[in-house]
Length: 115
Image 1: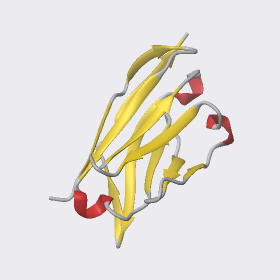
Image 2: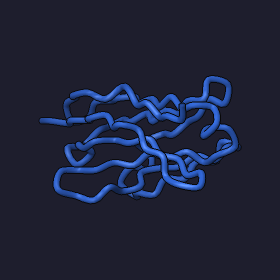
Image 3: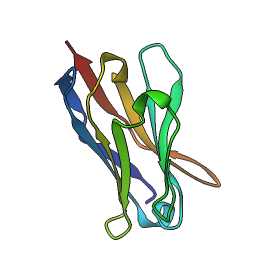
Image 4: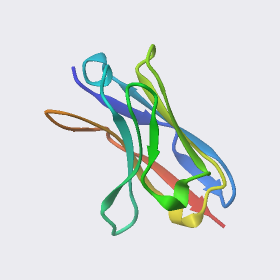
């Protein structure tokens, strides 16, 4: 069964850290670029970062560069998103994504940053 399952969200204060994880089924993970998106309140889903099958990261949002780190484990079929120095505007639902003929999405994990 093709699936993406996120974990690791939660509530944290400004300046804190969280690590998100996404477990993927092998058939959509291997050889594919993986991505993290987020959807903030009343906003559109936006691309946060991607990582290729060869471990090349790309950060789509200038606001996360230097604070977020995307990673992947090609043995465990997982990707991670280490989020440091979190800001209130990082609050949202974070989704794991990949594209293989069509988009595949996880169920999302909530990240809440508060003062």
